[in-house]
Image 1 (cartoon, rainbow, N blue to C red):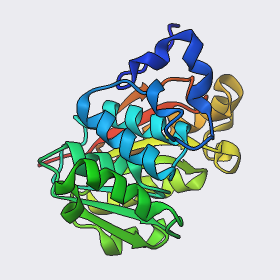
Image 2: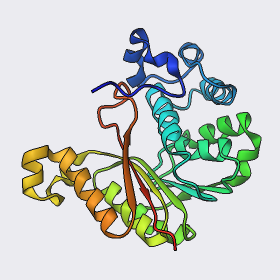
Image 3: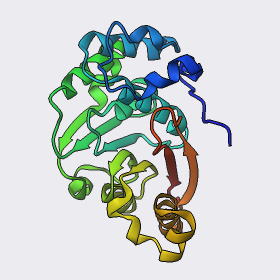
Image 4: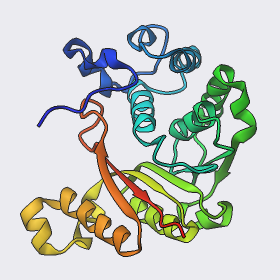
Length: 241
């Protein structure tokens, strides 16, 4: 099977740079030149690098996830849940002009989260009025989201991916998720699937059946494995009357 390529920062497809894709070093003036993309992406990267607020891996992961889901989550409102710094959601605010609101939801707001918001808004000033930060557990997400909000959950660990699915059902929205940390969730899938497919694949097959049983149409994709081995992207399209 061929490797999934980088779409936004294609220079990382070069074997000499792939090793850097998982770097947890801060994005700064030294690492920023490795990022070569379209003008908006470069403006955001330069602003992030100036603030040293986020690492290289998280930057690449957010951009590459966004590139794969932006056209599939068509909705005026998007929620990035268990969002950490919230860069994936912020890219919707900056780049998708038809998006009217982006909710960044996490139990605790990271200390550098405001720096990440400031960086994106320096590159895309129109984004600021769209952004709403909410400090709350994902289980309370329904209290803060409007109906038909699209839900994004990038590496929502373990059962948090399943809570993102619950939230998707509650608001009747589209979903994009990159699951990870399967230890807590593997037993949800039937044992026969776990034995035949392994815990990770079996768990996501089980999640797919769960979504489709409720009427959602599911597609699978991937971000580059050079960023993370847990690179599966689940996209679920809500039923619409």
